[in-house]
Image (tube, rainbow, N blue to C red):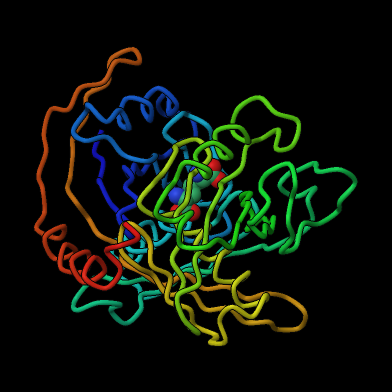
Amino acid sequence: MKLLKVHGSSNTFYLFEALYDNEVNYVQLTKWLCDKSNEGGADGLLLVLPSQIADAKMRVINADGSEASMCGNGLRCVARYICEKLDIEEAVIETMHANLHVKKAQSIFEELPTYAVEISPVSFDLNTLPMHYDDKNQIRHENLAKFSDDILFTAVSVPNPHLVGIVQSSHIMDTTHQQQLASYLNGKNDICPDGVNVSYVYPISEHEIFVRTYERGVGFTNACGTAMTASALIANVENYVSNQVVTVYNPGGFVQCSVQMCENQYELLLIGNATIIGYYEVESKADKFEFINCFLTIEPLQYEKCNIYVKEKLGQYN
Ligand SMILES: N[C@H](CCC[C@H](N)C(=O)O)C(=O)O
């Protein structure tokens, strides 16, 4: 089996192009690949499959083996893979709930390979997460006594589930509260039965925010593309930022998110790097796996300059 190791904003994945949905035991493969003691691990597996209705189909398996409906950082990496394979500059990728437009974009930092991907559909209805909190149909920028007394939360699906809190910088520097809340909502609980990605957002300026995410099925990651886009949408709707394009910093770098409202629909774009870390060959025998070859690229060195830029600009939050 030939796999790529890729990252979007340092959210790291293996990418495997398969012909069939059940070619390998993807849950076992993902758990093995994502084990931190195994070549540094990863945050999940991106499956690229044939599609009858688009240029390709993407499935997302989290590190714990759970499947998600969407992955923004991963979609940028799949976009690059398909565009370079088909020698095109834009494509359509089938995902669990939508066929999403992706395209090669102007570099976001120096010469980084950069792609723009559509994030859709968007819903604030709690039944789309799902989430149950008293008799609420929506949670829009409000204090939730069961969670905190000083954080304003919004629940949104894009379409994977996100709980986003606007916080003071103290909750960015100290992750204890976020860790406790996210661990509870991703364990056995009556509020988020399928779990939820929990992000804390610190507004920096009229056009910049900082986002740290505890991802469902993974834990804290360097970045979560759908979470950063959801956070930019909420910061825009609640007037923390005034620009249509928001720069979203995260522990793994930064992305740009475009938030537009057209015909009463949100149109969200996530723009950021799609970096290839290396090419791996894996041998599999009866659900046992072994790396038999590996070729690393120099692209991570190129990305490191972006990380240094962010740390110099916002080191105090990382
Ligand atoms: N953990 C997420 C899936 C991966 C999303 C994230 N890596 C992104 O870039 O959007 C979930 O279970 O909904």
